[in-house]
Length: 232
Image (cartoon, rainbow, N blue to C red; front, side):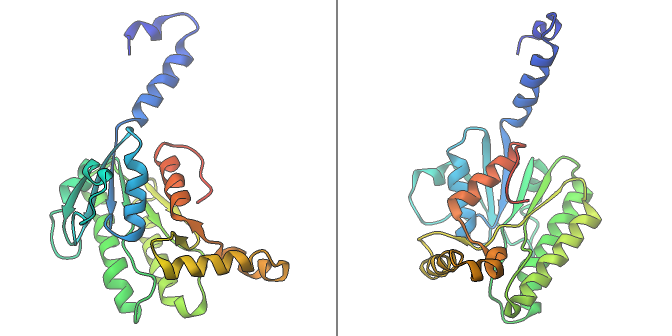
């Protein structure tokens, strides 16, 4: 941007707006769990936007699929619980998005090991090693009684965020994230959407309203760019 633009009479506001927009562009976005169902959907969506430089950390690393968008992502094979190969990528990121986790586990210890423990390691690293990166955590406000341990795990991570990095932690609350690629989840979402059309059931089920993976990915992109989102 030409430096004289800021000096022109009446252009100070324009200059400021341009500079703010430039600061948003070329964001380094690191997705933890990027090879999973939700992670791949988010990365595929973001890969179409030149504003984002993308990287993924997961135990499996680069997916076996051959779609062109996969080449736009740096795939890092790492286990957040067991090694430190992810550290530099976290320190270099503008945004770290935690998409680790499974909906159904046998007990709370399983949720802790697979969701809570890696999240706590990431948060501690962010607290100790970088003041730049923002942390986006996908949580949940409601779940059926049989998923009480799932909610408990989510709340434990939320508390860790609020304690360690409150100024850089962003917590979003989507409903069930679905797409046709996951047939069982897709069927559950279709049935739930149908039930939501029935007034007496809508009052009970509104908190569980599902969201398409593409719509979820769009909302994530808006958050990264500093825009409003329905996920908060």
